[in-house]
Image 1 (cartoon, rainbow, N blue to C red):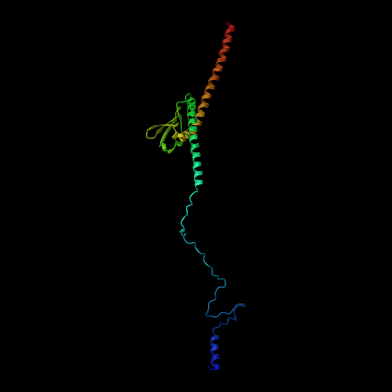
Image 2 (tube, helix red, strand yellow):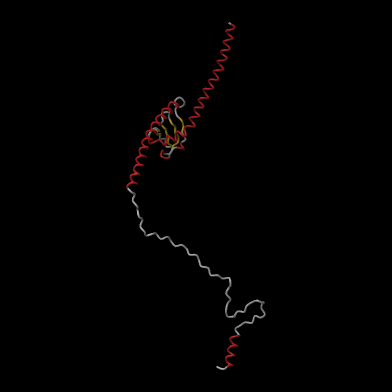
Amino acid sequence: MSLDDSQGSQEVEETDIVDVSGSDEGESLEPTGTQPEPEDRVDEALPEMPGPAVPSSVPRVVVSASPDAVVETLRRLREDVGQISELSSEEGSIVAAFSLAFLKLMEPLTKALPVDAGVLPPELGVVDKANVLPKGDLVVLHRDGRMESVDLTDAENRDLLVTVVSDAMPRFNALVAKRRSKIENRINFLSSVTKELQSIADSLAEVG
């Protein structure tokens, strides 16, 4: 190849450069055949999403309790059973004493004390009215017309006894207060009348 041919080839390759002499000062020259890459582009790695939990294939090892631990557990169980027996016996005595006291107090005041049907457990069914009697029975009137009597002193009904007594005690207290007020009013009336009668009697004695 001759020197003239190589110079001509070099002139052809240099024609790909664009003359940007008229552009703003400070701008760099770029070839026309390539697109400028943005300088602020940063390839960020996407966060890895956690995969589904894989159940462990390692079998669970059950460590059996030592004989001493089993004996200690049985010893505590025996103590708890003994305490339950003692508490049940004590509870029975208290319930019997409560029933007797409740009978003595309630019998002179009323024949039945109403109980809110809303506090009764759902096991009794749909209850329309309920009353507790002095002897310790709960008489329940169902909405279908059936009447049922429940012995509150029975060991199976101790929770029901607590519920009924908790609801009835405020009414019983009001009943006692009403009875006391009635007696006080009678005393005040009779005292005033008696005083006037004595005064009249004294006056008649003086006249006679």
